[in-house]
Image (tube, rainbow over all chains, first blue to last red; front, side, top):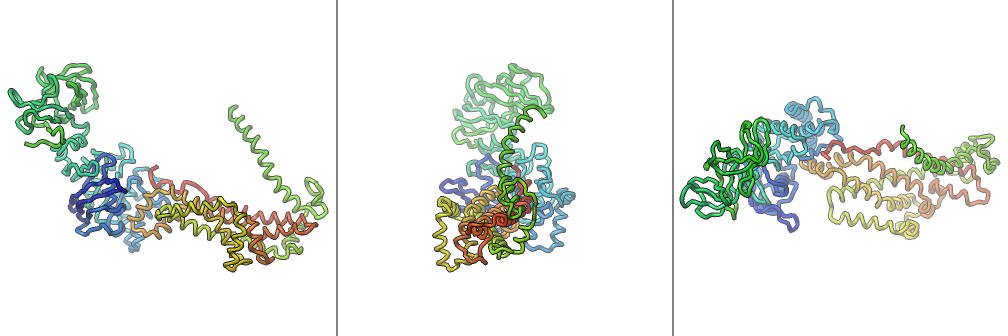
Length: 357
Length: 280
């Protein structure tokens, strides 16, 4: 177990700079997820920590030791690849034992570690099989087993679930989380899937275009996104964002979004006349029982059983509303929406940064 | 079986049967001569009246002045072919690994330059090669032929192995690296086992190339005790009254080892060795 710290990390491929000065610390035993759209540099950052990519500038330290010039094998890390990368000519047992054999570990110890890992991962019946004889989920577990037997300081996961089908992905997600709770090994996990990030992470690092957008616990990011990018990236369905202008003079404060559309606002941030992006999560929109609120027209009704999602045209823009239960509504119906101003997120239209009072 | 299938098969047969006959005809002649008595060999019959194995006895017992060193020459052919196969494999595997996996700078250029030599027909290179071997002082030494054959076989072998090794998933190398493998361990424990089918194919190619070589063998070796069986066969034609039945018998025997080698190694030339390594 160990801490990891990145400071001023930059990375260029040729003349193309892909990571622009990233720094943050991971504490001992923490499960940190790097998340962002493809091309944001999250995998590159992980591969630099793994020693598979050169670090152009800055330092990476594991447990206080700078590892920039330390070879992968001497960094005491284990990595699980998106494509599993199992040795196809070795049995499951040999795959797991490979690294320990290379280190000339005591055979009794190897056997013990492999058997322990295979019990944790329910791979006992497959130890003598070859990777080609396993299903995708089993292969992914072997890849994890290969990491576990090492008992490394840090686990690295590079989109390990992307190749699995949706159902298996949910199951493996829980398995990995349970594994971390059991082993408490510092873990860095890369994914483009914000749901994975939300459900698994102790802390999430949201990356975009080689920069960190925000670092925080899943609920911090959800409740107080620092900027528009994070606001729209975290959460599914995504936060509704409407462009408008703050009006505070006379009557109730609101954001004017064209014509009669007035989104309510409370005392908080946003000066009179300021151009803003007004964000509201789908579950914070409700259908008004009387004629008050923001007028709109239902476009689509999507029942999912427990919840119903409504796509609603409001002025020039469309917003999504999510509600429990099954409201009796139909397309083309005129409705009114109410918003608790406490749930509103305001962002500067120009910079995209969150406005705070 | 429906009509379309039948017609497709019929068309294939129509092509296949002539090809089969075309291929089998020389072999049939070889066998026909080998089992005919001397006086009937040129008789033009489809099958000899009295088939005999006498010719084989003569060859095996080396009872003709063209055949004084039959066993030694067969051995020479074998040694030279096997040595060529092994040395080519060693060089080509190392080069392909360096170019494809370690991504050594200038590796591709070296490979392309080597391939460029194929623009010059091997026959044109025979005389310079002869001169070179003279400078090295190994003319009439079997090493000269082995080295010449390795030179000819290597560029193609490197290319084939490089293509094959490009297909191995690179994540395996990275996984091995993180698991603690040095480049040599990666080569030995991960790369070689997965390359086995290609290695066998390339080794067999180089081996058969050397086994079938005539021109270079003829030029570089001259003593009757050093030459390969292929060259010795050519010497049969030096006189006007060539013993055709013995020539064909020896030729038949000369053709057997490659066939044996091919069938022995065929089972290693299978695909799908990397199945299950990565999601594809």
